[in-house]
Length: 387
Figure (cartoon, rainbow, N blue to C red):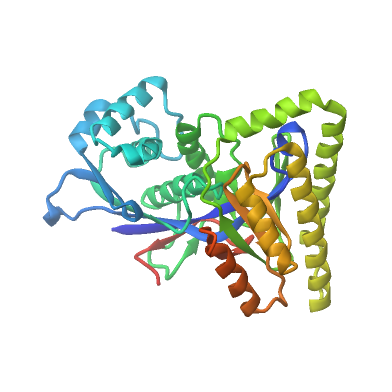
């Protein structure tokens, strides 16, 4: 039996950093995916191993099932319909299993993801041999939710091979989960995210699970449905950033200038709310789309200006802003800033030639560019491998 899941990445359309200080933020899925396939051996295969293949990295890890059962004897004692957090004791046991793999020093950042894999796999599938293959269209560590997409796709593929979800195994192409099943996938993915990040907000895995868009404020998430097509140019500056340090920097600036920063956060809150209203309002004709795109461009520019006030921009981000502005396109950073990725709205009437010119100019600066649709479907499953 083989199951394959795909889960989308995410962007923050507005409200990053300010959301920590009580403002509204808006996040959306993007049609760039992480894929996880799982195949269980047939009796004739005669192997008793759990294998994890990270195709994009050219890495493969494997463990004898007996070794996993020895180290994690209590794993999977609960049914897969009941998500379980990884205990401190289990974390230590998993760390030993990961250490045995001798991950190359240059790839040591993958260790937490491998740990999440071992916990989710052993908890949902217990001690069954299998081969799990992971590929992704998302750059790692760039603020596009790559770890969440991995956890969501992994949880979905594992659950699709249990009695906890009901899907037509004979269905063709990509299949959607029901509401209760999505909730279960999301909860398991969040457990994986906790292993990777410690104290994640849950926003990334929620967007990846459900797709479309969400607004969030003070821990409250609201699902949104877009009534207009949105397309973005996403530019990866390839500059690594320290999210904790950036968040701390905004907090310190707020302590130094409480009144001024209060106005900044209030303005961001208003931008996010207006953006959500525009995206969800009916769009009867092409003229309405053009008008709405113009408003979104202005809101993106204002949000970027406020992010600069917070001190989270970077010279590489400014390069993207200057380049896209030459073509009268609006851009803003997405996520933590200090590097990472930049969003540029691509209006519906924009010619493909202009897009090519912008991408060529940015790539000549050593940046990575790709286009993506915004607010599409969440996690999906296939039994077999669709085209």
